[in-house]
Amino acid sequence: MNQNKISKKDRYMVLIASLLLIVSCIILKLSLFYGFLGSIALSFVIFLKNGFSSKELLSMIKQGLIECKILYGLIILIGATISIWLCSGIVPTMIYYGLEYMKGINFLFAAFIITSIISVFMGTAVGTISTIGLALLGIGKGFGIPQHILLGAIISGAFIADKVSPISGLFNLTLTTTKTTYRQTIKSMFTTLIPIYLITSVIYMFIGKGYNGALEGSDLYNLQVSIKEAFYISPFLLILPIMIVIMAFLGVETTKAILIGLSGGIVVSFSLQNIDFINIIRAILWGYKGTTATAELNEILISGGIISMIEVILIVMGAIALSSLFEGAGIIQPIINNIISKVRSKKELILKTGLISSILTIITCDQTVGIILPGRLLKEKYRELDVDNTVLARTISDTGTIIAPLMPWNVNALIILIISGVTALDYAPYAVLCYVSPAITIMLAYLTKFQRQKLRG
Picture (cartoon, helix red, strand yellow):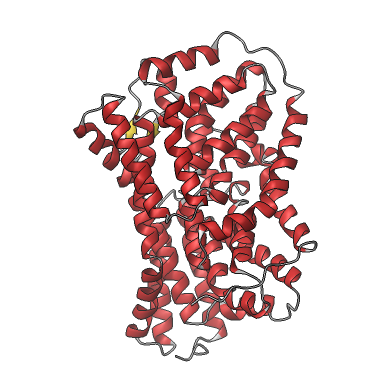
């Protein structure tokens, strides 16, 4: 297949038109899937004109979609598991003990810590912000903490999910694209995560000292009482999510680990929360909505179930199909080659990887393309320079994935705006982890000896 068929003029026309279609979806508040679908259709027309056959183009899309087939099932399982963990009392238990932990300490620092812990078990940054994040924003008013500052800390903690959670759709997309496993990559991830986490914690501890006023009323207590009245709460309910993380660390296949988490949640819902089988199925398919006596708590305990994940799957499939067309037709490769062709050192490779992933995340308004394209197209360069693919996965997670909420036009920032009413321009200066992460990654690239590339069959 000749990848030099596409003229330079058509190459840039496809890229610019695709970017405009995706941005238009953001502006018009349409699903990104329509942007990807329109870009795919336009690419088809232009590629056919440049000598590709429809059979070749369909084969490119088919191959790309098949390579990521496991991911679609994972996304469905994640949607079901989040709903079940809500109705089973697992997430409410996390919130209950998280609030207990916050009594009498630096609230801003505590908000970051507890949000980061819960996000790992929930596997979704946006889901964490819309649950425990909303609760913390409400409680934070009593401490006199400006909402945009507290939201910055919550976002920093929540986006830990997209970096390391074994049930994160984005992190699993990163693993699938770079052809690495969770157990391999998490070891590499800790190289940057530990200093990133410590530095971010110290910064929030310092900022939080200025907001040590007493909590007005009994907001914390009232929220805890509402949770305990609506659910059976016990530390034993935390065993299940802890097991999932432990299994991921031990190398258990992610799909199996999440299935165990889902199955355990169903058993807990039925046996301890007295939810009948019909309502459990409804929660899995259509999501869960809190029915407690407190309206504030009901607004926190919401998830969309499997149905809500259909759009996510379509967006991911659209991004994979488009990137497969671009890769197969040689659209992106020349541009990336121009960026990395003169790279001769492993340190410079890390820098350029972060740059490519970040630029793609910025211009496409979503993390998906910023994960897929560098993950697919840089693997050979990593092999050439004898750097393990786990470093590629780590660098993408530390840069393109984590900066997403900083851009006001990014999907994540728009969702956060809908959830909280706070714009990215207001909270971005305080989303410390989103800055510290790429900075530490690039800095350590110039200090670290890299693991040799493992041969993969």
